[in-house]
Image (cartoon, rainbow, N blue to C red; front, side, top):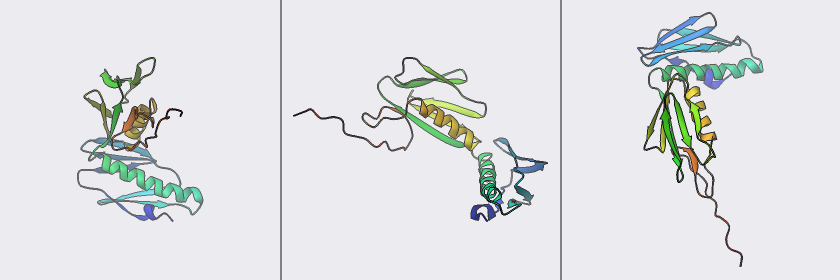
Length: 179
């Protein structure tokens, strides 16, 4: 049995939980999120908490038990305070700017990269080198941040590229002249 899955999820005041068939809806002050409940688990909302239990003892039920509890916990915390990811762009001539509902990256490629920002994610850019993403859906904000970083990950020699704020890039020493 999952140790994480056994913990009940506390639901703060101002957050509404509703189960309709296979769909769990959590609504709060910042928005609402839906989750399709897997058939291997039961979700029971009570007054001020949500309990997730596994229906069986097989491998899939046990794995879905902890996963479902964590997804619901992220939904409850996301509708209260949104999740944030920040990216830094380092390099000469590397920059980002908003173009409508998309972000335009200039990261040393032969063309400008235009990446659409999905609904539910807000994007702000500081000084053309710092991108801030915010959303109530933790998976969505992480997916958008990873997609932006994947266009030009930081390289270890000069440190140029896109990285998360606070990410350490392990630097390597370049070639030395032959003696």
